[in-house]
Length: 166
Image (cartoon, rainbow, N blue to C red):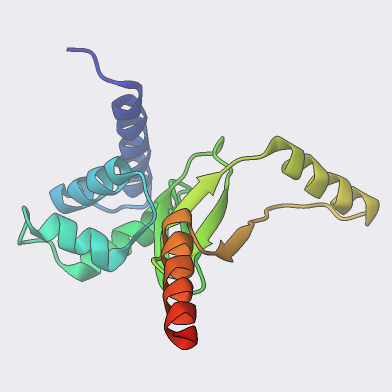
């Protein structure tokens, strides 16, 4: 059976982690391997707590501290990035050098949508250039209400207006 592209990328990232651990004199443990695999397979923004809950369903011997430290290690290696959105929860997302995207974050349900827009990226580059600014990294986070929450809020407002005028 052939590995999917996603499985191949996960394997490459796990090898990078193992190499780094060996170079730094750390052991490559079964727990770290499980955590890295689950995190990379999730492919989404996830808190250490959420990943811990997901893992401990199958692996009761893995502690929260191990999950947290492994995520920090993945971030240090450039295999993950830490994101802190308006709710002040630190989330981690799998990352590779070619990945860049921005975020739409719902203030009601917390949904996070990723998007890419080459025109916006070029505009940001042009603005930086006009100011003689060399951008090293940037992030854009747009906060508001997703389609589902926006329609729920609209219905709630209509109901309140109807009751007020009745």
